Image (cartoon, rainbow, N blue to C red; front, side):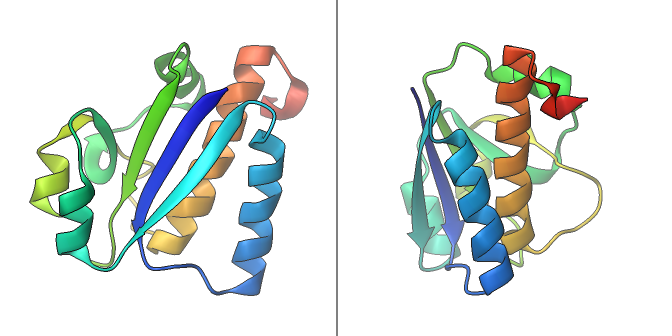
Length: 134
C-alpha cells in the first residue's frame, strides 16, 4: 500500500469536483492510502513542507504518463504539494525532491487535485498493464 499525502490550501466545495475526487479515491483505494492535508494559507503550507516532497509547480519538469509511472514505481510514500492562486511558496519549492509540472497551462488548484488523482490512477494502471491507459 502506497501512502500518499496531498497538501493543499482550502477545501473543495463544488459537488461535481467532490464527486470526481471521490471516484478516483475509490479507484485508488486498493493500492494507495490517501490523506488530504489542508493548509490555511501559503505560510502554513510552507511550515508543513518536509524535504523530498513533490511540488506541483508550473516551472517543474513535464513528463508523460508512462514516465510518471516509472518515476513513482517502487515508492511507498509520496507527498504532493499543490499551491494556491499564487503558486507554491518558496519554502515549499526549496524542499522539493522533484518539481513536476502538469502542463504549461494554468489550472485552478481545485482542478489540479483531480488531475493529480487521475494521473496517480493512470500510473497504477500502467504498472499493472490495465487497459485504462490505452
